[in-house]
Length: 394
Ligand code: PLP
Image 1 (cartoon, rainbow, N blue to C red):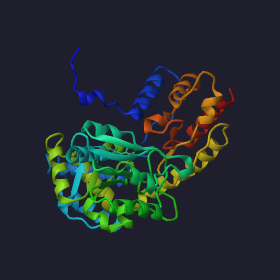
Image 2: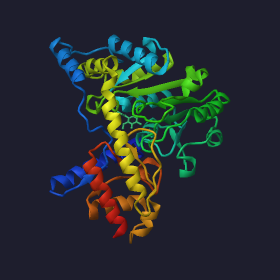
Image 3: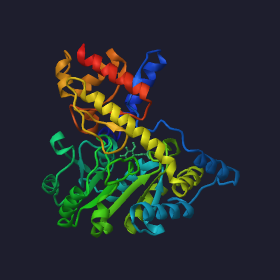
């Protein structure tokens, strides 16, 4: 067998994609699997966005573009940051990539030296630690409890910072918890960062628009503009506009860092798809009300699912502030099912015995939990709740 790099041997494949693949495989074998594993909206991309892509093809926009995105898309992103977030950037501070995933990957590659530490509050998006490891950095995971609403405290952050810390990663509202930090909480974290000028912060705002708290969306830069020179704002069109397959993410930050991330991209994938870039312009510049019916549906499903979960013995779930995920604690359920002692085993049991595909919390750094995506129909959610209840009562 071929001897692989040490680097790749420390990295695991995306567990959420693995659950989705397993569910698809069992379905293909004829099993009636209910899958709440995938993290993508079940809605179609809005028509005006698709039309913009078709128009781009017909105009012949089928060639290489600038590595970090077309000037027209960068301008649409600059306009979006000003309109939605009150943040000002120039073209040299913007980088467009193949999905939000590549934005974070570029960041790790451009920023980290071997042994550099990246602070990641858990539960976290599955890819952060592994992308840090691929860059030979060290993920420093901060565990949170239900008591703290699955949010990291300023004291925890302060304690975790060392001279080797390069970056703090914030994702609010969060995949997988659905929980958002409020202004006060962000300000408290920012104060710790102000005392530690060697630490940068990445705010992953991918779920910015899928939110229903009255306060609305805010990131750490909104509450602490003094962090401007060391904040990287990550965002994308995948979730807000139901565009996961188009692969467009973008970020904004300090010019020299963005230039280096552009270099990483120039030596790996080059520009994101020219046609998708045209579609992203239409998404960012077009009628923003296309998001409203989707967000409304996510909220209705959230209300149904979180209530249904809290009705199941051994399951307890916080209300989400946004996203399309619920992240219940299932420790009580794990104790009920014979022969099972972890969320990983519970996930196995649920798919084998109840045809229910969920992602175990361990994948997100939070044992004893399960992630359920409600980017699916009410009917499927009702059936999922029924199956989980059956498992709890069996
Ligand atoms: N950030 C978060 C928190 C996510 O949940 C995701 C997708 O699941 C991404 C980034 C990446 O999105 P994409 O690469 O599909 O644009």
